[in-house]
Length: 491
Image 1 (cartoon, rainbow, N blue to C red):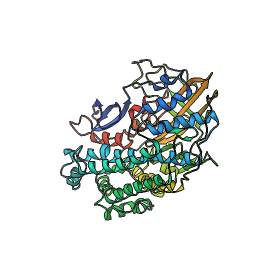
Image 2: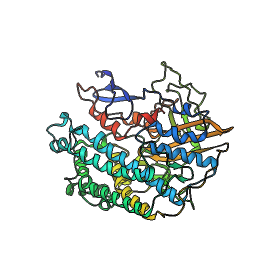
Image 3: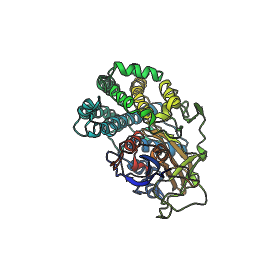
Image 4: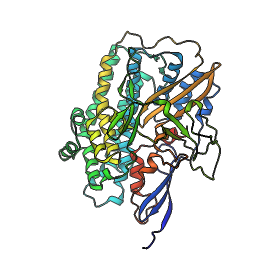
């Protein structure tokens, strides 16, 4: 037997990714054997927060990222509210959910149209039966879908303008609710904006009513629907996915994590519209947040004797070229890596199509993208309900104390890319410790001290590599299916 040659290659830096990303690959027999995911830029926001007034977190934490700043703001407000013993008012919670949903909606639309689909418009796929339409719609910077979606995204962000004042880095979200309220006529404006967003999505992205998309219950329903909706962008993606067998690409551990999306109201602040949990082997189990540990074994951080819970964790940069290969820490839930994102959220929410796709092929390129598009179709009607439930004239924010008491709390929310947590400790009136675990920290984590790979590293195993490829297309599809935000990863 002839031993196959092992080739080492470096994929990256990746374009159309927020932040810096590099992936090292061992290729054997035109397939990826192993992968090492490197977040090469350290930023240190956690260290910046230490020693400051607790309320400074509302200003500094959102500046981790210009794409998902509302998610960071929300997590910070929840952590501060936990220390203060405060929950938002009814109106404040509804409006905060609307602001967060707007950002997540905009992120999903940007990712699908501008980050993910342009890879299929490359000359490498010329000759495929779907190529000419894909090139016309999604060629980078030139496709007709670019203008469509930027207009729709800009329209959706008017919701942010009305409720949050501006975006990114709004200061409107507070521990007690929202810093400003809206009147009845502004609620009518919000419904008009969402109606415009709905119409645009139904016309081009889905080619049908949002409710028809969310009614899909099984994989066979999806493929039957695709045959009828091949003029839509979603239908086009499904044609591509079927042709390239994307349901067989990028499967990871099939262990999914969500902190629960869109908190309930003052009467039950623990309730979430889409629940929290761990989904594995077809079943959902309760989340124990105290099972989270951060491992530094392969990170450029001062090594610890053992993985630490975030309340005891540190962010002390230390170049360790002997073993470390990334600035990203390795978060683990009860010692295990977890995948997070829209796919995890919709699994927790019991969305039948998403659960059916995962039962068939696990978490893969197809199921991640479909879950994201199903979530968009579910979000807009939910946002319309929240607007109708607003009560102009009722309180928007509780009065907040002049000083934040000593204590500690966790602010858990869901960014577009998945589970986001802020661990806050206040001592003697200042922040003594602030640890953040972002969604891409989970998904793009390095190996831990026992050598277990992060979700993306594992998902890249077996990816095909064609002769002459510098950054294999299959690797790009898998990486982008997770929708990375590297700026948040190395906060």
